[in-house]
Image 1 (cartoon, helix red, strand yellow):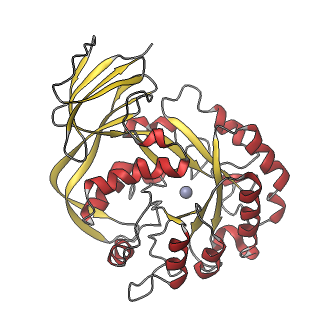
Image 2 (cartoon, protein in one colour; image 1 turned 90 degrees about the vertical axis):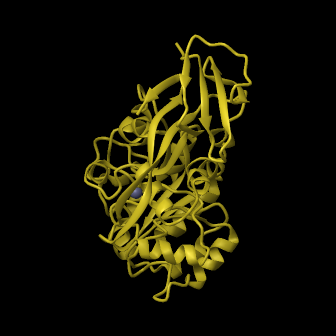
Image 3 (cartoon, protein in one colour; image 1 turned 60 degrees about the horizontal axis):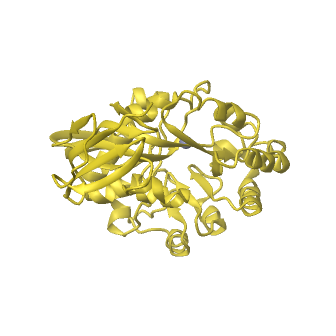
Amino acid sequence: MTDNMVLRGATLTDGRKVDIVIVDGVIAEVAAMGTSNSACERELDCSGLFVSSGWIDLHVHAFPELDPYGDEIDEIGVKQGVTVIVDAGSCGADRIGDLAASRQGALTTVFALLNISKIGLQRIDELSDLAWLDRELAVQAVQMYPDFIVGWKARMSGSVVRENGIQPLRIAKELAEATGLPLMVHIGSAPPKVEDILPLLTRGDVVTHYLNGKSNRLFQEDGRPIPALTEAVARGVRMDVGHGTASFSFETAEAAKRSGIRFDTISSDIYRGNRQNGPVYSLAHVMSKFLALSYSLGEVIGAVTAGAAQWLGKPELGRIQAGDRANLTLFTVTDEHIVFVDSEGAMRTGEHQIKARGVYTNGRLIEC
Ligand SMILES: [Zn+2]
């Protein structure tokens, strides 16, 4: 059963007001407000609401049984206005089948980046023993779940790789090349140093946590980008926020904005702990921080819609177009004074907050 309806008078981020007619879970018509003659059994008055294509969170942890890096799919998905989540390496080849099965019954669409370590986040030093990097098993997993696995994940920080330095990243690049899938690399505390990581990345690879404030960061003391970053961006390496518990600094974000090193995608790195206790709370909350940094609403929404969809190679997920399956997020932007806190405990004030109000996905309207 699907919810057939007309969404009346919703506002796009460019200010246009539209009616969106949905029949059998597919967008039948997108018309300027008041010009559509389509009748449906159900009409939703969307005055005061914005609409965008469904939000995509490119970096989450959605495997419930893992601790600390786990959560329930719909808690970080549709209930927060996010119609598509990408689990970023919670599982490797050992458990990816269980993650795939856990989608059963979930209303949120889930994709996965396969951890190059077969044990995934079963331990949080998953790249410290090269025996866990089983190339054959990893490639088999990708072949087994071609519609589910959309890339690779390698967490390149000292506590994860221990004595192995840059070696896991070399293996990750081999796997990426062998399968034709992109790679998301997490950066954090050294070793390895970011100067050694970035040169190995190629067009289409993604650096997540790019605005972290750790000493092994991508921006120098004076706020200028390190040369390896400027070169990587010029090569087509993409920058993802991946806010997380420890990986977003307002000071770094301000340096990035001054030097024009733009985000390609805004993601949350959400899991149970940082959802309930902050500093993440939700993708919408992370997005609101970028309004406080003076990015426009269009830029912020673009980073969780078209920007993310492009990287996934699924442009239909990032647009509102007749003939596509309806995948929409309804939201408000409230005027209110709010104090935002980053991963370092630093604060900035904002005047607006993005709040998810509902989604239409997989044939269903779900209120947030
Ligand atoms: Zn993560």
